[in-house]
Structures are given as C-alpha cells and as structure tokens.
Image 1: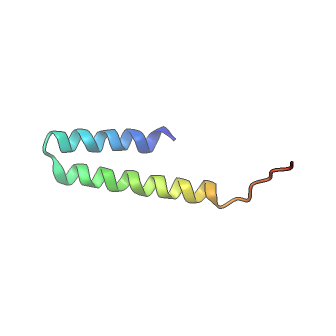
Image 2: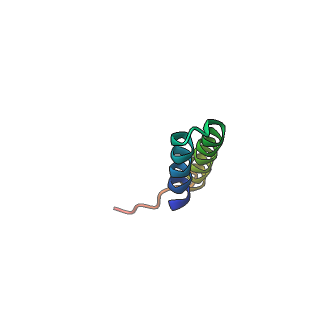
Length: 50
C-alpha cells in the first residue's frame, strides 16, 4: 500500500520543480494503481459472522 503514496510524492516533487508533464504522468500512475488496488480488495464478499 506504500507504492501509490510514494508515486504521489514523486509526482508532487516533479510538479514542485516544474516538470509538470512528468508530475502529471506520475499522478495518473498513482491514481491507476490506487483504483486497481481498490478493485482487487473491494471485489470480495466480507465474511462477517456476528
């Protein structure tokens, strides 16, 4: 779960140093990884027995 945050940090650093295209690409990669990770974990039923 650390990977999307590390990539988002890199995106912010690139944008800070005015490498805007590279920063936007890293931000897009972070969003895609986060969405894929969510779909991976949200697709299972919760087995909760109360």
